[in-house]
Amino acid sequence: MNIEDKIKLIVDALEDIKARDIVVLDTRKLTSLFERMVIASGDSNRQTRALADNVREKVKEAGEYVGNTEGEETGDWVLLDLGEVIVHVMQPAARAHYNLEELWGAGQTVRARTAGA
Image (tube, rainbow, N blue to C red; front, side, top):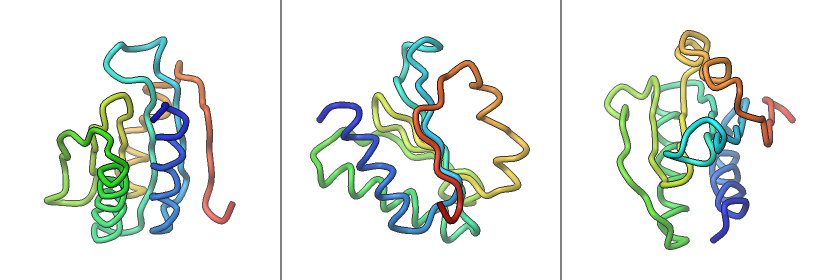
């Protein structure tokens, strides 16, 4: 599966569970560890865990690499390692506090969807 197909699969899985404010950053010029970063928001601990679980299951069903998952205990910020893609599912307060979009701001925004878009 090429990277664009993988990103579409991940974004679709997030949208299935009503993730908000989905952003995809191209990080190839910033790090050699991964090519894309996906950031999305969920409204509750339960939703962030469900979003991460849905992404993990859809990627696994597609036969793609699924590495470690961190943060499911609290659900404030769940991180999924999907090889060339890292997914951050965060509650709005954690997302505003850590502001990953600004931290990785040199990464080109490939795709962004806001709530209700």
